Amino acid sequence: MEELTINNVTAGYNDIPVIHDVNIEVHSGEIVALIGPNGAGKSTVLKAVFNLADVVSGRVYFGNKEITKMPTYGLLETGIAFVPQGRLVFGSLTVRENLEMGAYLVDHKEVKQKSLDAVFNYFPALREKQMELAANLSGGQQQMLALGRALMMTPQCLLLDEPSLGLAPKVIKEVFSKVKEVNKGGTSIVIVEQNVHAALEIAHRVYVLANGRVVAHGPAQEFHNLEKLKKLFFQQP
Image 1 (cartoon, rainbow, N blue to C red):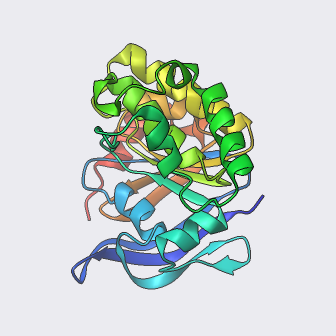
Image 2: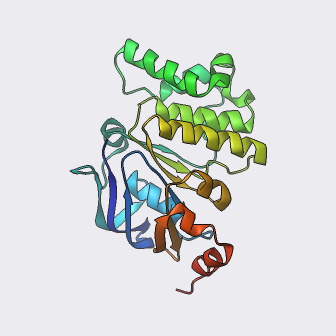
């Protein structure tokens, strides 16, 4: 399994930097949470890795391979997948068709079926509803479908952007339980999350961003102190 390294990355949109000199390491098989106030640049970190933000300077590596500005298909083939916020599914397609879209780079029918079976094992509800239109799923089921679609390429590293967004507390708990299960299967995970408590419950390590910079990092247990988090979140630039 490869490690993800974000090395001194400055990135943003339309020549306007959002994150500055960000350094993050994701070790093989761990869950790393990126937390911080709104506008801190957490999502931009993921988008910089997945070539959806403009990297102005710095480098991104996966193992010994530089992946800075690599196109999406190259990132998927390398072993990195991205689940953006908002439960983006193809509502007019069935659950099964959505999942198959996630494996569009896979030529072998047997390999695709093996991935599909693995996803159904993680998310039994998707197996039951595989012939239903994705638009008819609940919010939680749509989030699981988005996760499942990303897993169809059997990634080594999964980038998750706000998976709890808009979900009820009970559903959030279920989704995060599935994320933890996927991680136990060997997939490294980087999760951006506003629900700090939920993120800390599953993360091995944490990076705190404020004003586009990493202001603290360490084992998750070091960030359960609410007063410490408040000070970190609201640092002045």
